[in-house]
Image 1 (cartoon, protein in one colour):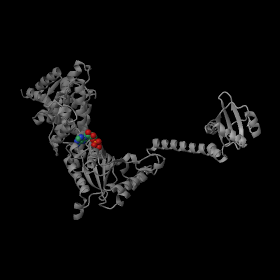
Image 2: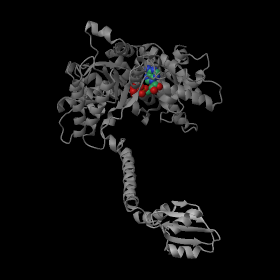
Image 3: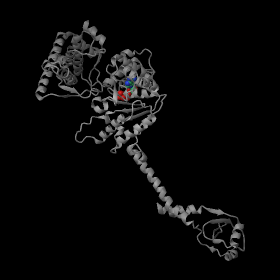
Image 4: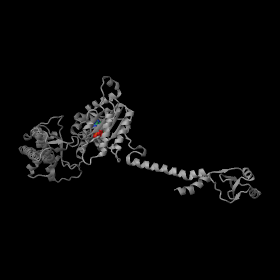
Length: 583
Ligand code: ADP
């Protein structure tokens, strides 16, 4: 590159600097013997010449001058030599050696900067910067009114907003805001959204980072990022720092061999930083997680995250409000009954409800409607929960019959135990999720305590499907696998966690590990007790299975009638079900 530059670019650069002068100057220079090299270019009708030390090149137009040759001879100029400017030696050294090196260094810096940026999200000069996204005073951002339901959480956070606006009111009494607030709850309940709403409402700078962003390719980077984040935050106080998925860095330091040093270092730095600033400096830390039990106790102690705000799955009213908030974004039939939709979508999280609305809108477009109808919404609930309908009939007649009896078996056992409509609707259209039939349960209302009898009834209901198959077809099918799993889980929980077995009294034999993510459990008892637990679980399920079989046997005529109806119609609503049952 250097050679090319010197051989091609340099002469070109030098040649450009030809100064044009008039013929008089040429004659004058010749007379004063100031000429160096002269070259007559007949074709271009011009004369190129240099001065004595070859440091400048001149050009002039040619005149029909018969004395030219003689005059040049007298002046002592050289003929026909190369007209190349002998550049100033310092300048030429600079141009040919220093300039290219400088250019290469700049290119190298640029490329390595780009590589760093790709590798670690920061460029060469930004090692260990927190690169937190700052949301400042977002006026069009999310407000509390966009977050439906979750009133307790909102109330709690509204206090923070108020504190940031009227710090003095709190200082006068001597109250200090908690330094850290931990939002805990299942996925999709709006934790991130609430944090953004706090920023939107409080009009202060908002630093947002995800726990995983602290942990990077380079060891030690996490800790330095934490340091930088807090430094920035303190400069910008009052402000809010939001750390999403804090469990990525805040996990218990349990000293396991091969533990993650980098993560522990990051956590230590976070602990120190949270201790490091005084109360009332106006830096408030919000963090969200769905695994609060895995957090290090040092992190959750008062003085660091003093407050824990549960963000739970929405109840009936909450679901209705969330549906309404999201429905504002789509064109809707004015007769849509949100209450009914909310009742049907029991157990859905905010994110699922948002998805239901969107699925309904997509369905409306697919069907060429101009707006979203009640039917679209109802169908989309089933889509979100159970998957799309399978278009081609894949069930044989015999299978369809079995599925109809199975689903009616569940519903009939449930209805006979509670004497009320157990289902909203049953369909036996296969779904893409693999479900052959689908039962939409009736909302049980806000129910906080469940009695032993209710749990037993639930197990009986779960075994009802299989019991009906056995009663009618005298055989069993694979369709009950999910029921079996659920019934076992319930029976096991009754014995190991709810103390509903006489033999074990109130001893916890199992502990729940992550409450918000599926609720896995681990056994905490000896092998003998385990064997006994298994025996009791089996006995409990068996007892309920027999009870279900008995109920179905006593109502065999209703079972046949309902199953036939479902087989023919493929869908039965709770109302129709009760009419036939009581008819
Ligand atoms: P997470 O609790 O997992 O952080 P998010 O805050 O990211 O959940 O919520 C995901 C999406 O679900 C949001 O973007 C929003 O559309 C919807 N959502 C969840 N909860 C609510 C709520 N209470 N009100 C309105 N929308 C909600």
